[in-house]
Image (cartoon, rainbow, N blue to C red; front, side):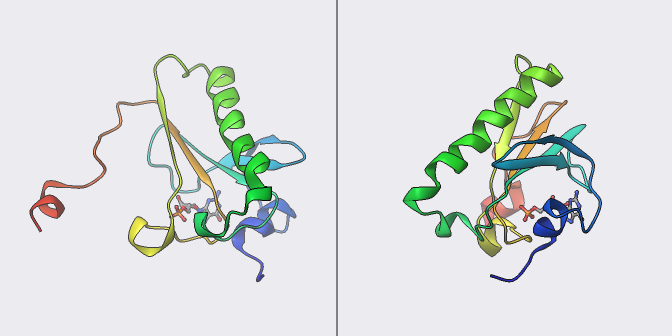
Length: 121
Ligand code: 5GP
């Protein structure tokens, strides 16, 4: 599988503001934050999209959520609330083909994630 931007961050070939690392995953600040807190939590194993997750990946994918919850507690926004999102393919807005959980917090987050104009279309 071709190297992605995120493999380069894992391999320290390009810089990132890393907030957590363990044997299975890495978490770092999104370069274009959409909320006061916007972290990306990625597996070290390269998996392109949600469609490519295999049964043997269940531990690593579950681990991403445990790390999201730990970071929320450590950073003190677990009670206020936060959102985790994983986009899959073009219509969902996936741009980097190495799965990643977006962890967003620090302000009230709108829901649902589509605009009135899209609703009417
Ligand atoms: P996606 O659109 O695939 O769900 O999310 C990709 C995310 O990666 C975007 O939120 C984008 O801002 C972030 N991103 C893209 N390039 C870089 C980079 O070089 N460094 C960091 N830290 N984040 C990046």
